[in-house]
Length: 131
Image (cartoon, rainbow, N blue to C red):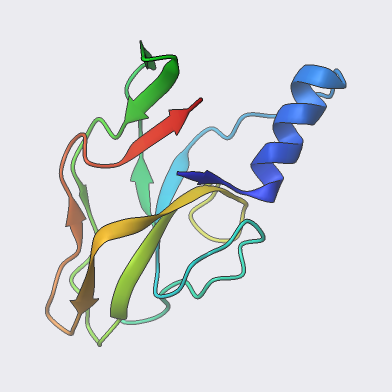
């Protein structure tokens, strides 16, 4: 996953400048029809019953010099009541609406979500790796 500018600056301010950065109490998965970018300027899905879904992660594991965590539960979005478009990216955000984008990545296989479809992610399919 790519870290957003917000997360990169928060890490520097917290660990190198003794800044007090509050950790979000919950994390939410957002779906995008364009790349969010480090500035969170992508197009997130809107309407048609879309709503960010809560996501939680496993404890980090070290492997080959990298720390990795994955989603520890299945994530299901509401059934689309209109066409959402082709989901190309996902992001982890600090709030169900608004908030900050922490990290994002491309979905392995972009998927067109039409009315009546349901987007879901199985356990351990969304991975955050820090090197």
